[in-house]
Image 1 (tube, one colour):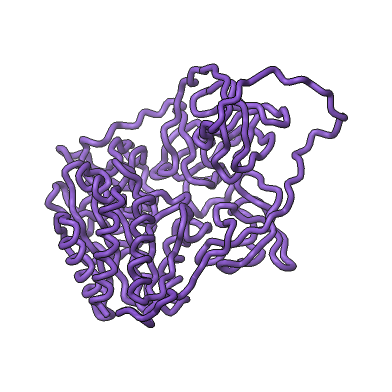
Image 2 (cartoon, one colour):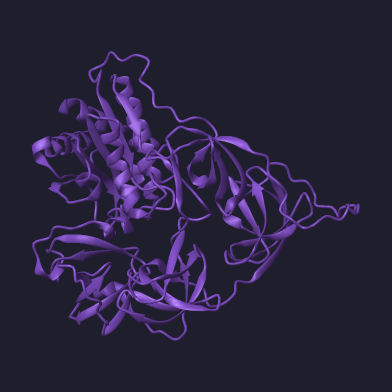
Length: 513
């Protein structure tokens, strides 16, 4: 699961090695290197026999404190230290290089550290020019401003423009709302907002951006990943132009529609568009709201007497169901289980032959069906490709076990998939507090998975993961297999094998009780 990818970098790792004690002082690195592997293990010592304590992803910048033979001693994240193979590193050369912002929002500060004052908030996809690196911070220039951002949240941006290809075809918007911009990039100004299902005419492509015309005659650029070919191929003809009555060029009003909150920990209603704005009120899970005026993923929301702005990622068309099964007569009658499909939304998991966040959700949904058939009441931390909380990585991690506490659950199971080298394979499980039953639960579920799926058995191990540490009920984190291993990925990505995993997890939970 990229070990909960960037999210786990925020966790406190209890490691008995002085080499991994976090530093409170900023280090000016002698050498900066960039990770080239999709997933790179950080270990307590210089060799594969040492324990893995964290994972880095492609594009992350690390400080090399000691350049060794095959293994480098590095500083990464928020002052953490460890050893990584230098085979998957390349030296960073800074000469006004261009990089792209990877999180939804990235704070630009007036100094190299969290304690410094914010200057601006950069949206995902914004291109910045890197001037220099100081430890884990990059000094950048963007939109006429100079400041510092956390370098792990920058990825390589293309330095040469993509070639433009001309087409004439009708396509359909697949995103809930898609921004039409006046240029081929996320840093360009919004022209309009296109609702899911809207048909548009594509004239040309500039990299991943499509130059389009809407049925209202507006022209601009949209991100082409959120378009699909229309089922009917109507020839594009030159339209008959009827001059409309001149109006002030404003974004057309969008009628308010009723939506429901699908954030298990509640949805923050803010005073403005963006996470940097003040929280007005937290809207509870399943509450209905009136939504209008969507701009760049943020909607104007009316909730009771409150009016503000919220992310549309956590608003759905129908009310989420938290229901008891119709026939609560099985072996788990009276038990409430919280299932956590790891990652989702802006917090993507490990990527390999399959996407972790997708297989986690599919296995969890099938597990829910088996548990309900056994008479259990099941609550999911997510039921679609959304995060559990929109307030940042740490809040998303806390949201998951907190839901189990809030619902007074009997058990909490977090479902993930792993990543590593191409040869790494197998299923494993983790526990945090054996006295409340974590280790027993982890063992029983893993045994059932191995028996039903034939996966290679990896250890049942202790882990200080936030989703386990934050639980107040028996909890385990399951790694079903490696997305970076072709054989494992074929199984965890297969609907028939997902069903086997789900049945095994449910059976292990039943045996626990």
